[in-house]
Length: 152
Image (cartoon, rainbow, N blue to C red; front, side, top):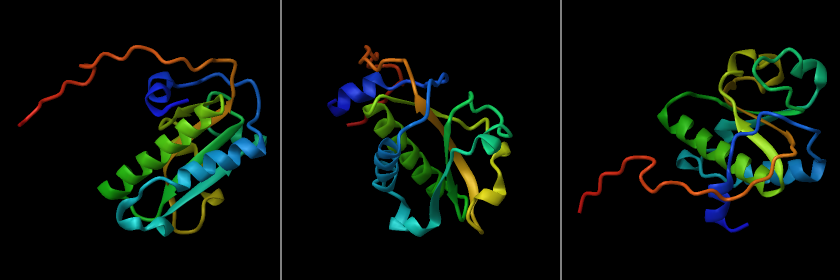
């Protein structure tokens, strides 16, 4: 799918029908690693994939997703949160390009099991994902959906 159509087809998925395949997951993680991060300091970010049903059952607000990806950071500041957003957007678009449903999920941040994250890192963003019966079709997005000021 070409990029602009993909952006118009993007939507939050909250109902999952099955687990992502290992091949899909690898492509999604590779897309996350392709995201830009502040000052190119990739060592300050970690992706933790949680697929263990016992751990997922203890997490709140994940819509019974079979896969959760936690983006964690060493330090929290404006640069890290912008970079984390870029990583999350890449993860979601890569998922949906493969027909996998995904959702940005900040509600579950407090229930991320800290003992499953690398030492010295804390969760900054959560992505839920799994197979879905939803289809991704480009939709009309109003040009003025976000008000824009043009300064020339």
